[in-house]
Every structure is written in C-alpha cells, then in structure tokens.
Image: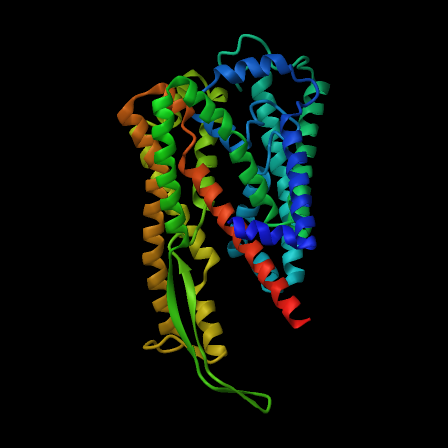
Length: 429
C-alpha cells in the first residue's frame, strides 16, 4: 500500500487527481455538518446525543452523521445509490431500458439521465419524510423541544428544497470524482460517510471500557481480514480460444478464464435490505400506536429473532436476484461461441450457458451465506452479551465493513491499473 502511494505521488497527473478527490471529499464533509436553514442546531445536537442504538446508529453510520442532524447534505448518497439499483432492476424488466443498455455509450448516457431524474424524485420523497417527522417530533423520539425554529409551510419548504439541492450537489460531486479524480465517485463518498463516524464510535467505547476497546479492535481486524479474503476469492472458469481467420491473418488460439467472484452481488443486497428494514421504522409513527409498538418490538432491535430472520432472508433473496440481472450466462456463452471460445469439456452454446448458470448458482449460495453471516455476526454478539452500551457503539457492522473493504480494494485496483498504464507509456516513449 505504501509503495502504491509513493508511486502515486511521483506522477504529477495522478497526484493532481488525488488532490482533486481529497478537495471534493472535504467539500462533501463540510456540507454534511452544515445545518439546513431553519433548524435549531443546539436542540438537534442535544437530542442526537441522547438517541442511540438500533436504527438511529444505523442511520448515523450510513449517512455520516448527517441525516439526523438535518444538514444540507443530510440525504448523502443514498438517493442516487437507490436510484441506480432501481434502474438496474428496471433494465431487465422494461424492454426499452434493456435496449438502451445494449446500445453502448449512447444508451448508457440515457440511462444515466433517467437515474438522475429518479434521484431527484427520491430525494424529494426522503427529504419530505424526514422534515415531516422532525416537524411532528417523531424523528428523534423523546426530544423535549422542537427541532425546527419555525414549522410553517414556507420554512418547511425551504428545508426540503435545501436537502434536495444538497442531494443533487452530492450526485454532481460523485460524477466529478469519477471523471476527474481517482476511484468511483459515489463509492468514495459512501466510504467517506462510513469512515467519518468511526472516531466518535471508537472514542465512546474507549471511555466506557478500555478492555472492550482492545477486544473490539482485535475482533475488528480479524473481521476485516476475513472480508478481504472472501472479497478477493473467485472461481476461474477456464476458456480456450481456437485458431481463427481475421481478414487474411490467422490469429493463434490462447487460454484465458472467466472470473466469477464468490460475492458476486457485492454490497448491494445489504444496502437494499437495510433500506427496506428502515422503512417500517419511518412509517410506524404515521400508522398509530399499536403499529408503532409492534415495529419497535420486532423490527427495530437487532436482537429480536424476527428481525434477524427477515434480515437474512432479504439479503439472500436480493443476492440471487441482483446476480441474475447483472450476469447473464446465455449472453456470455453466446459471446464465447461467436469469438471461437469454449470451456474445455463443455459444448459451446446452451450447454455452456447451463454450466455457467450452475456454477454461478452455487457461488451465489456461498456468497449469500457469507453476507448473511457477516450481517448477523454483530447482532448475535449483542444478543449473547446483552450489553446495551456496547451495542449502541459497535462500529464493525456488516454493512460498514463491506463498504470500507470493498471500496478500498476497488480504489487500490484502479490506482494500480493507472500506474501500470503510465509505466507502459513511459517505456514506449
């Protein structure tokens, strides 16, 4: 890692990209701590400090501490991430979107434009829900004073528009990082959100119990090492290409492989499941006292068996569904047959597609078990230890570790690829 950073700073172009990315990250964090107009900052800080555990810590972790503080960038990257996932699902269900996806760069530009429109719509919905809960005193239950200085229609509209504009600005920052910086913009910003709240969590644990702090650090290191190992694991399907004529030239056959990751779905199932499980908590105050009590009892506490069962089942279901729409064995088999490639021992065409689907199904089963175990690990530990203090401050959740490790590995790979490209250019010169 240090060698990569040293080589990175030696390249003026890459050094400029890195500094540009760091500048946009600093701007992003500034927007996350800047309160929206009309918000009583003192009351929000007081109530956020007293609202801990369960869904509140999850929201704080995924938003970088911005959502419950009603800041300008309170929505963070979640509207864009959710819109991207929904568009990927629609690309399989809607024939028009599937046709655009096959048109190459032009079609992808259209899909990106549709994703932006959906991001704005989701941002309006999310901001309206958050401000409505804050106005009704349900965003931070138990808060004795109102979070808004003025709950009139004009003031509420200004706050909602500010948050929506902040979500659009975050989307723009992510695209700028992707185009002119290092790494994938939205992934970098999500990584920033998760890492930003870690020092506060770790300091709280250290103040409560230094022994628990040391144990948690050691357990966290083992967990991160295990995640890195699984995220790098892959099944390589061997592919052999026969000799073929290209114009008047004979192209020699070569051997390669199709890499299929164990966790082919990545972080998407966990993020989507967390978002779905958060919806009942948001909607419960609007449904009545009985519904709210049932949701708080069954779907808010991570130690409840029903919460664990629903969590694991949704993760497994989304893992299979997402892999099925992002990797099409029939298209891969058709592409291999078109260019003269074949899997040794498997006939080209339909038998190859069936073989790839079989291998992918087994890998997805392993990946779903891995994601479910990783997500349940802290919840089971909390249920066994029954330590509320540790539960409220545990930072090594499955979602946060997956985001940090996944984005970190992907960014390092992109940096190494750019360094190798520039080394080859220097050699040619």
